[in-house]
Image (cartoon, rainbow, N blue to C red; front, side, top):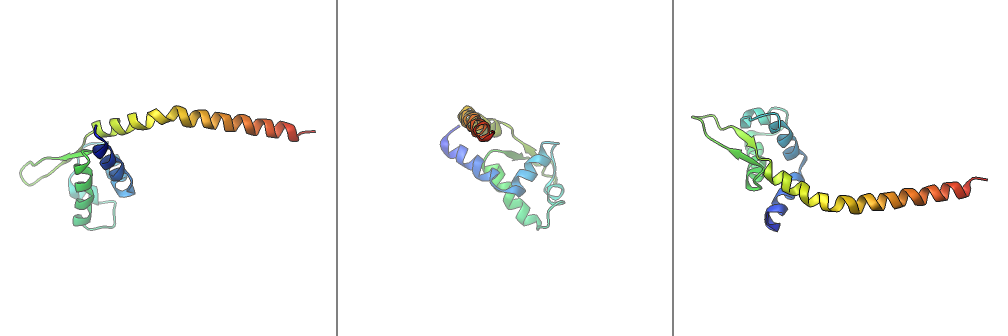
Length: 111
C-alpha cells in the first residue's frame, strides 16, 4: 500500500462517525439508510462519510436495482494494522522501562 493510500485510510479512521459506520459494516452489508439510522444527520451527510471511506478503499458500494449496499473491505485495515504493528514493540519497551522505573522509585520510598 502506498503512503498516500495509507494516509487516506488513517484520515478516514480519524472520524468517530466513520469508525461507527465501519463497525456496523463489520456485521454485514447495509444500505445508506440503514447506516444513517443511529446518527442525527441527513442522508447526504452520511453519503459524504461513505465517499471518504470509499476513496480510502475501506468500503465498496454496489448496485442492485435501486438498492445500493455498502460492504466493508478489510485489506486497507490490515495494511494500517501492519503499519501500527511496527511500533508496538517500541511502545511496549518504553512502557516496560517506565514500569521498572516506577517500581524502583516506590521501593526507594519505603522505609
